[in-house]
Image (cartoon, rainbow, N blue to C red):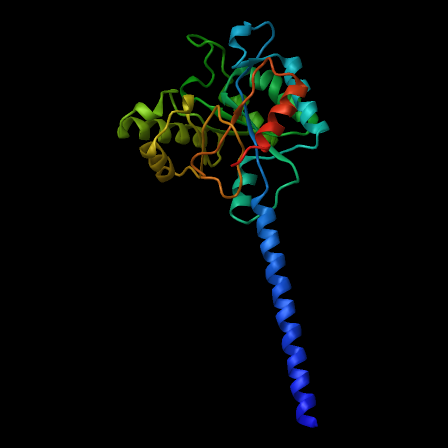
Length: 270
């Protein structure tokens, strides 16, 4: 009789342990699946100005329209994050908000400082600006003036703007030899780190031009993340970290159109 009670006790204990273990495993799998399902769209803008030629809407947006875009993102529950936030999420260091989004600018135009930075700061939002280091502070021999290192330092210190690399001279990286690629990667990284006293770990390819060689050399140079441009879709924990997708936003896109564009991309298979 005693032996039967002991046997029943151990059987009961075994069942409890087995069920508990299965629940833990199931919850872990669900948590992992949920983490994998976090979708991070990345928007890319360029220049902000009034009265631009409609033919150049792909790289221009009016200040008023950009402000409407920011309000639309906030009103639709999106939270701006940085590339560091995204990278830490991929590494399992931190969680992301429910609807994360990254706003980025390419080239480093003065208008990013005059309009974009101030609007973002007012609304408590963040963005990343990928600068061409050879044109920082340039006002002549460029299509549009670029902000200076002092202005970049102000934006960086505010915590609103994260400055990262868009190469040194804005060349099509996929068409360059190894020596030229390394110069573009390393010189731009060095200049930003020297002038802003920060680590540079994200690279955005000019014209979206890249290849296996550029990706390998960028990683070797210390870039943790690499970005394309003009893509469809979004990024997850499983996305290739050297081919992050970015959605180009046109200046003719309305605030409602922006939300539709983002939601359409979030519905695409990854």
